Length: 125
Image (tube, rainbow, N blue to C red; front, side, top):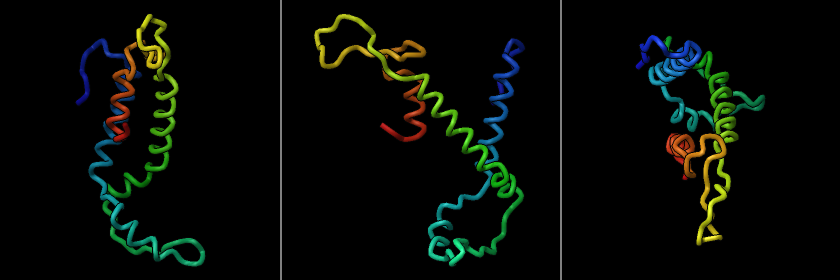
């Protein structure tokens, strides 16, 4: 998946490698979605669930960085939303109730490709 072009920006390459590593680790780790629904009723008075489970190396690798990765992705998403937002393109239109909009950052017609990609990724419309 890594682009091996010699003129690729080293910082961009490092970011791509980090993101690809997170994807690979996430795919290898087990999903806790089903277990979390079963464990929720077991929360004790102290607010914890005493869990005895078998975790693979991949699960531990994933869990060790999950919080920081999720916080980083959330911050990244918020920054992208701040950058890619609609603004009036200022053009003449016959439909004044629905002016032509362009992205404030990339100037593509709204919704821009970046916003559409984020919307598809997070399944929002």
